[in-house]
Length: 213
Ligand SMILES: O=C(O)CCC(=O)C(=O)O
Image (tube, rainbow, N blue to C red; front, side):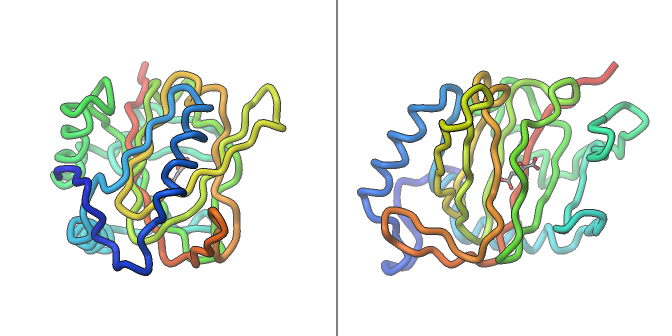
């Protein structure tokens, strides 16, 4: 999946240049945050969504999720070897390997959570379980944009929204991973630079390397 600089979105959905500049400035405020737009193409997004929809959705949260590699226990904030499901399926292994080879992740991920967000769904502000997963976490957005808010743990007035485009990759390491909470606000559309972005079904694939033992 080669990243491309060309936007494959229809013209009316393309993001104005100004908003990319705004994004770059915001991202610079959060050390350890990387953002790659068009990490995958629209065709690749459709193929991945079709693959995801063949999987088994878990309905124990407000949004549907799928776990691969290891099951993560949200209540206990725990993952251990007893929760191992098995090897990642080939289609996720390929992406994990690519993220490693392209330098987005320092290790090959062995755990993936798929989150589905329908318009009006989100995820509350959190820092991913520190003893469960290694430093770097990478998340791929499929199907829709959404705003992800980043809030500094030690000064909650420092809160920066970043619009994640469909097909984009966001990577959290170091400060961004441990000192900034991330959240997707519960709403049906996002405002970004004066432009309204109605949400559609968004599916994210989040790659992590489990700390076991
Ligand atoms: O949907 C996303 O991009 C982020 C998912 C997330 O924060 C999580 O699973 O903990």
